[in-house]
Length: 231
Image 1 (tube, helix red, strand yellow):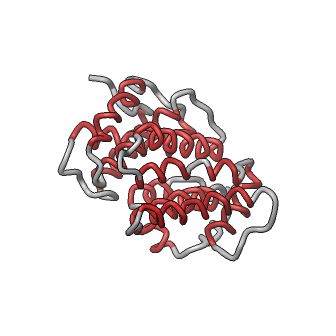
Image 2 (cartoon, one colour):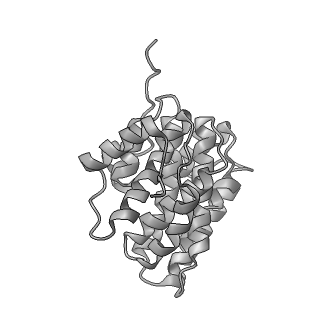
Image 3 (cartoon, one colour):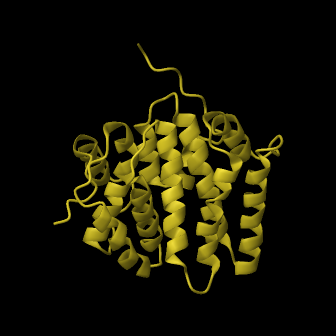
């Protein structure tokens, strides 16, 4: 039986790929069509907060904009979303699948940490852990180590973009993941952590996102389920 048609994204595919990053765009191509709009909505909310941080010329103004996102997400649980495509997509595709606005609002502190003079690595790790737990919920899978996979991914993805000290912190969740094998339904997600482990092992200069070697690594992970072998 063929897969159901993929509902168009709230924003154009090229714009979405630019917003969420080429690695996540590769991951989306491998997600089942019926849950792809929900994944797009989740990644788009996380990317919206990342964009606030990236564009912030003053930390205080960035914090105000992040607070707006947090408040609007929390409000999704009690009323109609405002005329904002990413919030509308979250209301249509995530709330019916049991992911609340409050859940999504929990991503905000991890991005706000990047506006502080001293970056709190634990808040970034917690954001990644929450992001992956929510994504695993969409996939219908559970694993006690999926939070570690998310923490590894978040720390490395921010680290390779200009906060190199986070790479040292990322070694801890990588250690906890050593030899752990994720179940097949979760591997499309844990493949992102596999790419993070690849970056952690190689160090700078990092290979560009979305390149054929990274796609090959993701596909190999679909067979092995192992993020890091610990050797």
